[in-house]
Length: 276
Image (cartoon, rainbow, N blue to C red; front, side, top):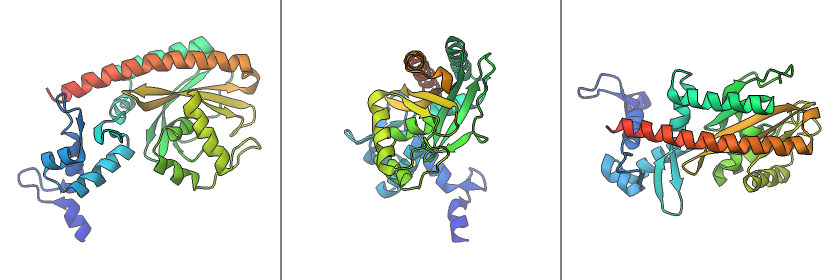
């Protein structure tokens, strides 16, 4: 009962069911404007009137969900990639969705394979778009659009987990991996080494780790220096020779760069609209 009363209180003219925690979180987000793109905990505490420890808890939650990013060198928070990704997942009526859909269709036509796009949602990745090619091959994709970060076979999970915080990687690596095929990685050290290689090489691979006969490759889509999305291609194993992989990686990297630039531009315009 005490928790309910703390979370839903009279709002003093703002409605009878003010959810206090949500209000505080939105209050923190609203501090980021065109003039205040990066703020410290002290800045946020002073602006919101909340205790620094309270601000830290909210900021860490928002960071985990991708709505804030944290720069450990400067100690500053800024708006995260989830804003732009949320716009995309609203549907094809948004300008951003139309832009990224065009890129996905162009990539699918160029490589002749199924293209997938995923965003991180807490401890999961969410596949927000799939574009099939005209070829007969249609991969059996996960039944749910949500895939846990510890599903290490998934190229989207590999991309997002490789670029996640050390704490997130430790938590995910502590969860026993499920073996789907003889190629599925289950050894913790091997998985950690694979994730480090993903960052180093800029690409993640699924070498028949979840389905025999099916491979995949994905690259990160960066927005303002952070991984906003993972862009992947699903391929039958017979079309995943070394020369095929190099071609796919090259095409993915080019399109990911275009997506990132457009994503940043669209997200920037949207952030500007929030404060005008």
